[in-house]
Length: 300
Image 1 (cartoon, rainbow, N blue to C red):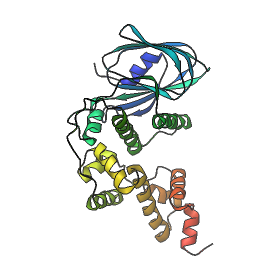
Image 2: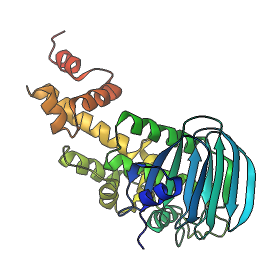
Image 3: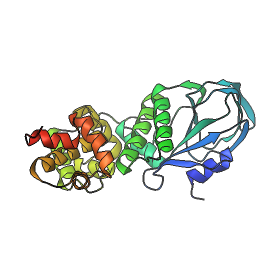
Image 4: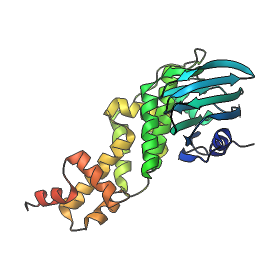
């Protein structure tokens, strides 16, 4: 049966899930969050794919049972994570310290792990190490908290940002927790200036068009995971940040040369709303769009 990560998470937790990111059918990644409100028995069953679970609350007692054997019986501190291995039957009996907290589940499919492997020069999908709940990773914890904050604000990542989160997490996990037997096939070429220029032209060709990480990678002639790593190393910024800055550049030109209302400038430059545009524009230029237009036209 085809895996439905959201349904699996709901069956496991016994609670309705919020799909923070659902790229399962295209990228092989899904992130789900649930509200924990008291002691609970989690029947994970047989894990279908490598699954990262992160608790954002303290757990007084946490019993991890794998294939009928108690593997760990101890407290878990907020922010700790576990990498669950596919094919193992898992049951967790948890008693939280708090009345309410968040549990995140990241599902990592073969397509995503193969991409992460390609970025490391591996001949196949990355196999992850077996990690239990005493593992601490500030990057994973920060990512989980930011995703929860986004879900609580009602803002979901756009397609490009969602892909970037998926590949960044997969690359981080493969860099730090790849199993020793994962084979490497050598050095991969970086992103040269000609490739970077082609990507910039692609983004600016139609700033209002939806842009995905996969499309940007294709322009550069790379896999998405290889592209995101090479792009950051070459430019010092993530692809999502690059796209935002290129769209701000297009908006600046419109503000300087046209009398379009700011909301129309925002939409023409590829921003979803005037408020989103204002936040991004100020972050890049240090000015609001309206003030930038006044200053450029000499009207203080």
